[in-house]
Image (cartoon, rainbow, N blue to C red):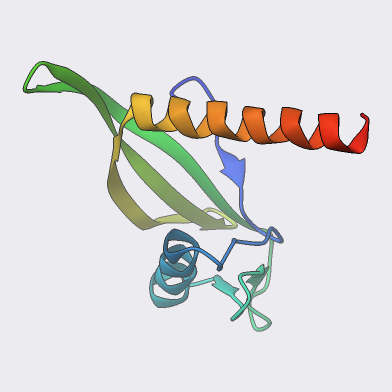
Length: 122
């Protein structure tokens, strides 16, 4: 993630089935001057705004912490909006990333996919 370019959220849909998606939707609605997100998570440019608008996110401030012999990654999730020559931070939130938990989720999903393919003959 630390090598990824910033990604534009404008006209994308946040997954509001999860608490994190609802939180991001609410923070955009509270802090953005030029963008908003619908109840169902669709991010859009506010109707009264003139000019070219972007709402981008990126990750920064990567660090590795060690707690009781286990290493954890920590980074900041940043959302920035721009309109013309103006730019402002919409939010900056620290994220603690447990790579072992993430790897377990990925492996579980791969097992389910393999099982589904075997049942469906794919």
